[in-house]
Length: 251
Image (tube, rainbow, N blue to C red):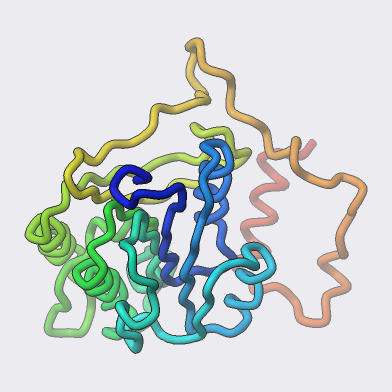
């Protein structure tokens, strides 16, 4: 990156930026390599931008929908090293239940592709729910088919723009996080082959360090609030999950 741009600054774009968790990983990597990080962050939600500013105060922040900005107008000249994005996932996740399909929200991965086409970043990193791989057209009844046809077309569009692309479901526990959160990661690179890092931890009987337990990061001095004293009761499905957890893990 530094050779191509002639400096020691990594230029990053963070779309649908949230609190900046993915960017924090990039920031730590830059610190390890002795590189500066220049960030342009976009989210339509003011609260998300305010949180992102607290975590990454030196960034250039924009309160706007991704599709309503013209990328060359908001990103400084000089090229983009890394574009990271976590498009809205509720209309791909199985957790959405029987809610009606929202075409605008389903379109959010296409908006990422528009930014990639106009900025031509050297590297692209997209994170989403695993079900994005089943992204398919809507049937006659207005429901997603989940056959993966649109996802395949979307990937091919990256290829058409000159990117080597690969995707993989990764478990955060395999990389030292005390959670078994699984997410789909899509990596695109120009001029180099897309690849993924080797696992640093494992739940298998091998030479890697074991998964870290959540107990390592829980503040056990904070007992929280009683479920029975809430102003608004939890929904029945949540209470059922809590009850099942008690049955499985408590004496």
